[in-house]
Amino acid sequence: MLIIGERINASRKSIADAISSRNAAFIRNEAKIQAAAGADYIDANAGTFVGEEAKHLQWVIETIQEAVDLPLSIDSPDPAVIKAMIPLVKKTPMINSITLEASRLEGILPLVAEHKAKVIGLCQSGDSIADTAEAKVKMAGQLVKKVEASGVPLDHLYIDPLVYPLATDDRSALATLDAIETIMKEFPGVHTTCGLTNVSYGLPNRKLVNRAFLVAAIGRGLDSVILDPTDKQLFGALKAALTIAGKDEFCMQYIAGFREGRLE
Figure 1 (cartoon, rainbow, N blue to C red):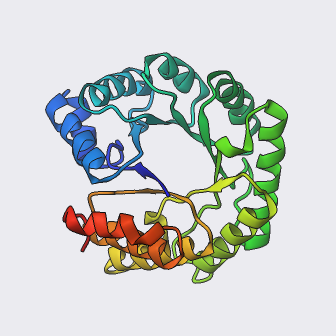
Figure 2: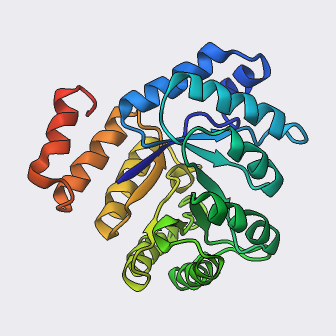
Figure 3: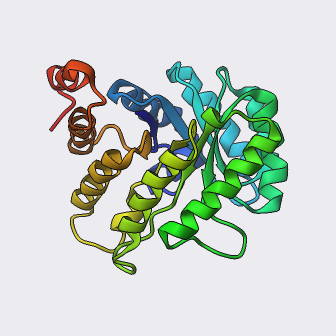
């Protein structure tokens, strides 16, 4: 299970404030605690700074790399920003993300191919969203074709079927779970990933819903996730689900997490 640490995102007020004030110690600490908690990649996002995203994201990337040795997930919808950031990273990055919009495909996929990066592909086009399992799988197939045509190995593609808030669509989680299972079966070599927080938006006790959805998604074949690895209850649910799904040989990861005090 590949874990992408989500905490350094400018949509969080504390992160936006730290970026604005150039509070490097705060950003370095956010990177360190995610690395210590088990993140494989650290997501770097400065997207709320419209018109100044590149300047701020460069500082974020440089600051994270001062603190940890993990590869980064460069999180921007803007091909120009991603192109400017890639030379700054010390390790091969993940690009977050492409959609079926022509501008993002044409602007980002050549960069992914050139730098042998991993890439997150969202089941989304410019004029429609995929709110059923069938629509999600159809868009996933279109992403697979585009990625293959660009020369990017399918092993580098992480498809996010996109889960929408249950508060407004009580079938959204089920549609996404069905899509994950079908994508993993129909497109060998492809990975699936998911940002959890949308599923619980508008509901009370959101973390409980997030945990339940994550466990169900792992049972359907999800093999990557974008989350806060410092959330011990969420991380514990993840490790327990991997163990139950037969993806933790001799339960060693679960036992190690318990011994390190990372599970609740």
